[in-house]
Image (tube, rainbow, N blue to C red; front, side):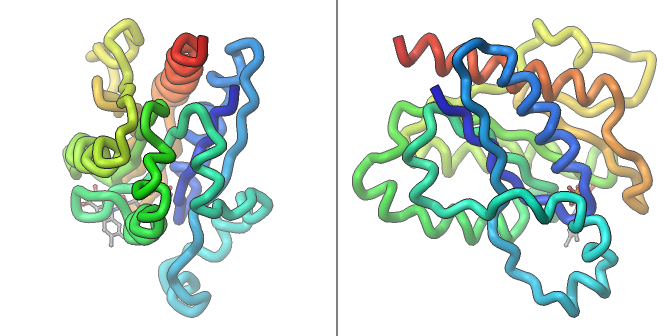
Length: 203
Ligand SMILES: Cc1cc2nc3c(=O)[nH]c(=O)nc-3n(C[C@H](O)[C@H](O)[C@H](O)COP(=O)(O)O)c2cc1C
C-alpha cells in the first residue's frame, strides 16, 4: 500500500508537518510512504525577494511530483500553505494539470486528505482545506480529515492549529513559529489515520 504526501512549502512549515504526516503513515504496517513536492512556479529572483531561497534548501532533495504518480498511490495527503484563504498557486497549477487523470477516473476511490499552514490564527486554514476538498471530490476521492479522537485539537491551554478538516499550523506574522508539538502530533495522527483507512479500503 502506498501513501503519497504531496506538498508545497515556501518557508518550511508545511515541510515540517509533511515529515510528521509521513512518520504517522509509516506506523501502519505494510505502508510505503513517499514525499514529493509540487513544481515551483516562481523565479529564483522572486523567491529571493520573498526570502524563500534559503529555507527551501532544506527540502530541495525531495523529488518533484509528476501528476501521473498520483495514480500509483492508494492515498494522497496534500499539504499547502494558505494564500488568501485558499491553496497556493503552485498547488493549484499542479492540480489543474490532472485533467487526464480525471478523464480516466484514475483517482476515484483513493483516499484524499489535506493539511495546511497560515501566518495568523484565523487566517483561512479551514477555508483552505475545505476548498481543497472540492478538487478531491471532483476526482472521486474519499476525503479523510482529523477526527476528534485526536484529543489535542480540543485543547484550550495553548494556541494551536488543527480542526476536524485537517492538521494545520500557525506560522506567526513573520513566519517565526514552527509547528508545535501538538500540531506535529496532529500531523502524525492524520498520517496514521489516512494510512489505516486506505489499508482497510484495499482489503
Ligand atoms: C501571497 C500570500 C498570501 C497569504 N495569505 C495568507 C492568508 O490569507 N492568511 C494567513 O494567515 N497567511 C497568509 N499567508 C502566509 C502563508 O500562509 C505562510 O507564509 C505559510 O503558511 C507558511 O508556510 P510555509 O513555510 O510552508 O510556506 C500568505 C502568504 C503569501 C505569500
